[in-house]
Image (cartoon, rainbow over all chains, first blue to last red; front, top):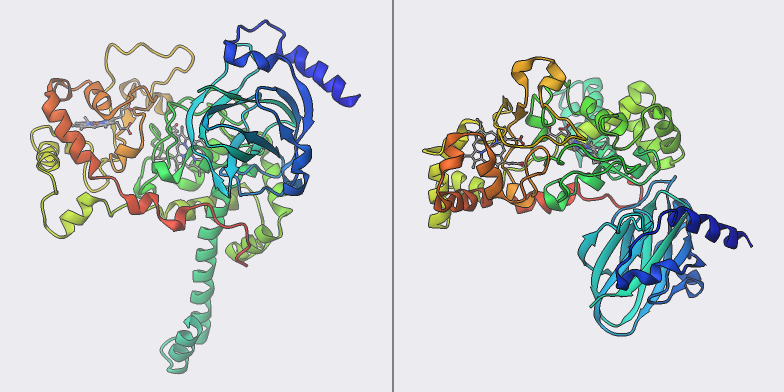
Length: 159
Length: 325
């Protein structure tokens, strides 16, 4: 119930003006709610699916035990969270985010290096897009140093 | 070890015990001030919403710049100037791109924390929040108590900024290839870089402003291209915005060229993407008439000013989460 209200609030805020999205980002418009994990053992409840945008609930930073120390750590008053995602084939993937949180994608304890950074199309509600060259496997996606308790997140394959 | 040395000195009557004691605790306080400054440099609680630390804009691996033209603030306010490198920042009398009466690094650190032109960390009118947030952390309480015993370990903007200053004063970069070869009295390893060095210190007169060893004369010059269209959102007249004196219009402090190969983009507004663009941009006949060959030589020389031991120095990295005290 609460999350439905949140979704509505978020969507009206996000799409107050109609944005023109490139085809690889059309999934951005259908959001479902998912709450971030606070630690590794909650990860099974925080799985993302490729090409499905999610409205995400984040946690106050002091409550989170990250799997690996984020590159940019938020202060005590910031928000973050942990997710996991299965990558079935190697390629270039784009993490699309509604706020400016720091993103770390981790597999086997190592953070993947980003290959490109971009802002989103105008009025899309997208604040940040970061591309990574990934191999197949299960990745932990960590968000840190975020300003808000909710945001929106999409992982999509671009190459 | 230190204690034994002190005991021997005291026992042999070389130094009076009280004096020895105070040296010991001063050294200890100074050491902790640096460690504290390092912790604070990486702490995003210095920003209004916990999203931004000093290191968000000043990344060690890029010689403490960030690779962006300008960097938006914690609340997404637009940035105004390009993030400068911090190598040897303790040696400057004039700080930032264009200011001539900041009392030092402590006062400078208040500009990102609570400045409003531009808004960076966004703490203006919320300054007391910093003390409140940091006081909740036991490690900070311990470290401030040791570092600022005369002030009873008070955690406020003044002690925070002085600790940051102590840490920043340790940013010393003097081990580039250029430095190593100067010390051993040898030429630079490639013909190109050696030719660039001759040009830099000779015919091209770069050294008259980018003076060794800082590769900055710590002074202000007007080298803005006449044709440059002003950025309508962010009016920036350089030094005259601080002094109110028309003759300082568009004057900026000479940036150091140490580690410049690692700090693109360039210019006070980040408008120059490459070193060659930056060199050509000066409104100086010399810079605008250099041949492409000469520019390539100068860049080969500037490359030798990169100090890899500085950008990899473990003393400047994000400190471990464990409290050292």
